[in-house]
Image (tube, rainbow, N blue to C red):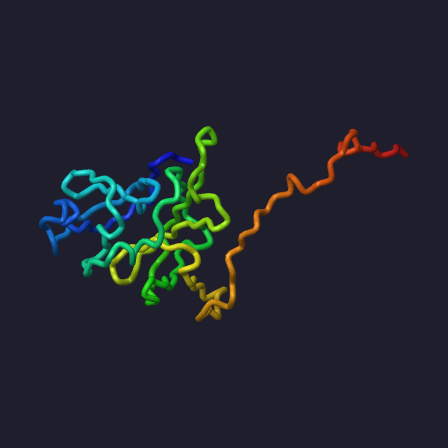
Length: 210
């Protein structure tokens, strides 16, 4: 699992120019950009690197800096639900979700439609350093990236997404049916009976010849 930086699928979009001028000017202006990688810094939102059409490569911009069509800016906390849990990040496209659309439940409970792009996930890879974060706890969260119809990009966890697949999800939920977070740790290593002899070895009995 890469440390800190990881390539992403390329996203051709725009960057809001105020993010190029320290929010001092550039409001209402856009520059064509190509998002190509992400940086994962613990307790910060995922930060994306973009190659601009003027030849400049700009690093570590939040999702609120980007849009795929001109639209009014939204607060960052509407677009990204969690900060990064670890500097060890994985980027993948969930094949089952490729091409699917979904409704995203925002903090204000509004439902935003979007198309799935890819997923960010976290773990703690360096076993030589004390793991002090929450990337592998029972309440682990990933972040699915969406291209919203509104022009914005969103990064949301599973519990804020209602997926739509006409061939499968024919009755999407309208409220929480009572699901609860599973806090169990699933392991079989310390549940077996201990043996003091060699009976735990598999006994391969040869088949008698006829």
